[in-house]
Length: 479
Image (cartoon, rainbow, N blue to C red; front, side, top):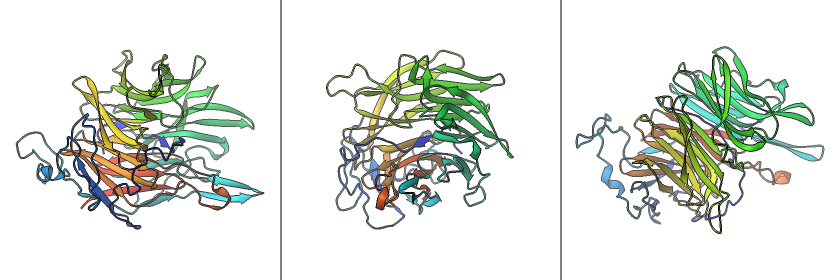
């Protein structure tokens, strides 16, 4: 289990522009066919701001070094097998610090989507549109908007070796339609779930609300950070349970008449307290992942969000990335992270054991994945992957060694990608399994749920939940 608590929250992106900067259709997979193994795409060296993520060798399927990077062979023996100190006697390195040493298992389907023709129309019910994952104690916990029309939000875990759970989180009779989900584990490894959505009182009237559910080992208990709101339902809700078992919720909702305000809520014995993070910033709402939340071991709250850029002119980005941090009851400290790149509005954040925030974002022009974190007081960004149409469905986690791990999607190939930062640079993998983003042909050709990922860590190994028409999990292991 990762010592640092971060929220899992994601849904399929709704943006178009799937062809923008798609690059090579091979996407560095290095192999063809239905193999479930991952082809490592090598390690791109270079530190923060190195610019190039490397280019693919047409003969080996492995990356050559980036413009300022080191070769992948430079780090094969930097760490001892036990994960002790490096050969130079410096900082402790993890045992899995060698490029290309991971392989990915065959994806396991958690729940399949369905569609049918009924009275001349198509009923389309994906299972991987709204979902989230948390991993702790070797157990993977997943929540999703079920494809069963009677069970809107369902929780499962693999604690018994197979996907099973205690059934419904929300009451099937409650008629609650989730727009976003989040899951986090408390210190007893019991799950808490955040749901942002619409409660249909009686058609067509509805109430927008944010709910918080916690499992006590026997029953799901719920309360309301925001029980009834006018305006749109919370589109990008996040939840984290900290080391004191205090719940933190972040969502985009209405505040003083504005529908795109970033709202933070925390719970104590007296109940929920809500407040805006930055009233002068209006959060973009094109996707279900326009904000993210993490809490570090000291209890500081870290927030990243994409927001409108009203000053944009010409070729400047209409969206910028901002970051906010709060220690205790102090005021929010807000700073700009990225306003140079033309970025998409999906973002995610995780924090390391030392409290350092790590952010993943996507650049739109070349559909590339970027990582950024503060270095000596300034945010430094670096390209992680720009091979293929990879700037979609991204998520981030940080392990106990402070290393960021990223999952993301090559939308052109309908495949997931994974990258981790090791001592030599970014070690990238391209599993060759494809995931459906729709129910297929026939009359449901217009039914489509873009593929996205959420990421947890089992120790230092990734557990990637992949959403689309179906919901699946992909695990990696050391070779």
